[in-house]
Image 1 (cartoon, rainbow, N blue to C red):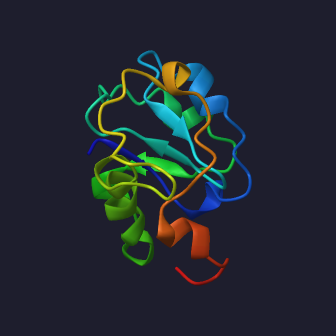
Image 2 (image 1 turned 180 degrees about the vertical axis):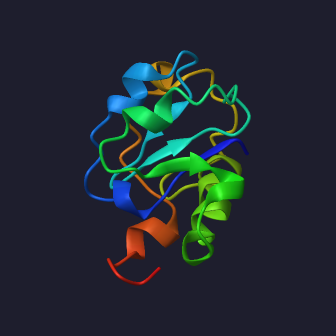
Length: 114
């Protein structure tokens, strides 16, 4: 997985990164944005666009935020609440639109718990 969005995005979702992404691989949950690891081309355009520095390459995510690497993948590989199947490579966030749901980890996340 090239890039990951971590805790700083929760309940902020500025969406500047979505505007910079040339392949439309950043999807909107209820509390946080998620980068589709299959669709991401590892260009890095999203990282400097994030005003809260929530985005980094998976191998540079600090140890205390490592759960966000796995959780980002779960958003696309596991069925989310209210959905019958995993999102998978959906063909672009603009095609899907805001999903209005998060992984269980993010739905239950409290600041300061990571």
